[in-house]
Each structure stands twice: as C-alpha cells, then as structure tokens.
Image (cartoon, rainbow, N blue to C red; front, side, top):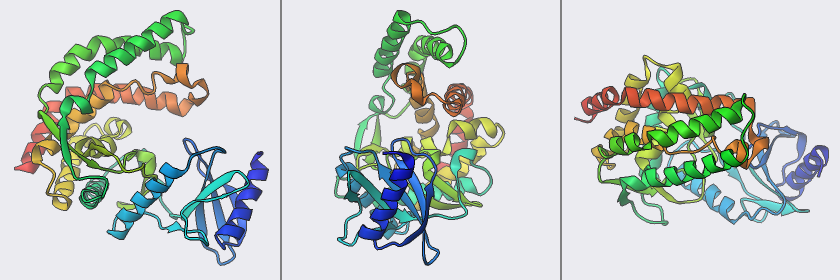
Length: 346
C-alpha cells in the first residue's frame, strides 16, 4: 500500500471505527516498526495514530496498550487510548490495523538529554510507574541472579558470532561497518574485566513488571516536567534498576553533561526512592554498575550492518558511537557515581 493510499485508509478507519471525523491526516514521527500519523478532527482535537504493518499479530500490542492504561489510571502521565465503537483498543480493516491515542502537544522526547529539574521529575515518574506495576496480575516482584541482567557469557557468544561473520564478509575499511567490526573485537577482549567489575553487584536484583522499553524516544518532556510515558511493551519482568538506569543514564545524557550526570543521577535516584521506597537500596545503588554492564554486554547496534543494513542511518551510527563512548565514561567514574548514591541512600 502506497503512503497516500495508507493515509486515506487511516482516515477511513478513523471515521468508520472510531467516530473521529478527520479534517487532516499527515505523517507523524517515524516508529521502529509502525508507521505513525497525526490526525486532527473537526473539533480541532489532535490524535496520534499508530499503523501496524500488514500481517502483524496485534495480541501483544493490545497487552502493551492495556499496561499503559493501568499506569494511567494510577496517575502516571500516559496518553489516553481512544477505543473503537466496539470498545477495542486496536481497529482492523482492509488488512490495516491501527491504534489511536490523544496527541501530546508541546512536548519533546528525552533524546536531548536530562538537565536541571528533569532529573528529579524523571526519577519520580519512573518510581511511581514501578510502584504501580509491582501489583500487576502478571506476577509479583521476584529476585533473579545479577548475571542474568548483565549476561557476560551470552555477550561473549554473540560477539564471537559477529566476528566470525565479519571474517567471512570483511567490511570496507572505512565507515560504520568497519567501526562495528573493530569495536566488536574491543568488546570481546574487555569482557573478562567487565565480568570482574560485575562481581561487585548484589547476588540478586529485583525484577517486576516494568515499561519494558523506557528509552529516551519513549519519554516526552515539557519544560522540566514529564509530559508522557509512551510505547509500553507487553507485561514482562525486568530489573527495575536496569530500567531506571536505562533512561537516566542514556549515553547522550552522560556525554552531554560530563559535570552534571553524577549529581543528576543522585537527584533522580533520590526522587525515585521517595516515590517507590519498596525497591531495595542495594538495587538502587547498583543502577550505574548495571547500566555500564548492560551497555558493555550489548551487541546493539554493532550487529545492525549485518542483520539489518537498511536500518543503518547517520542517527544510528552516532548513537552507536555514543553508546560505546558512554560505556567507558560510566566505568571510569563508577566509584564516584556509587559514592554519590550512597549519600542519597543513607
């Protein structure tokens, strides 16, 4: 289906199945898998429309939307989902499936990094979110071995596989692919040291139902406040410390705020603890070590030139290099970061 044809199909679904009379439908910000649209109705209300690729099994997407609705009912800033005339959260017609939510105006993603009052605002929001989801029917919190959160053995296998594939099809000497191959070698060589550093983690970390994809593009900010948390994943247990660290220690924030990320992290963790005092202090102290270990054990986006060359954009290249550089910064200043958190958690 062409872009124009799909736009018309989206407009038809809005009118027929949502009772939204669109006066305009335009392309929205790109999604990882979905194609997104912005629609305005005859009353001037704006809607965010997510169109799923043909053949998508939307069962998991329904679960993800329901998880967001659970958080919204408890006061977490999540955009309201518009239901169809039959009460569903996803509508399907003519091979196209869409979901519709209220549009969050005058907001920007957290990709520009955290600063000022945003540190505490994000920490407080994530704390409230985790406090809400701890009672989700998918199951109560449970401890897992810390090595399962930062899996060095798995990273070794993945990096060895990547290097074998690069050896079979050597990249051109210049460019992102060559950087990925070289960096994969560096990462593999560094894994014994990574494993030694991760020995200082608690034996277990608490897992619970979390957002699941709380990356910077999925957190919307307005000034120094959190405007919205978007794009939940289906309910699943992950480390709460991992999710907190993923958003407050985003590589772009760490690199852009060399003098501020440690006190900012302390403010975020303090606000998180005030909102969610049930997460053990040792998990919160582990946030920067988990963040550094997770980045060191991740092969993304080093694998993208091999697995999905079309996904390699200048933005992805810049992000990949930032992840690698930020990993080094986190390790270098880990003792300082943990000491700052000890002061907050006393």
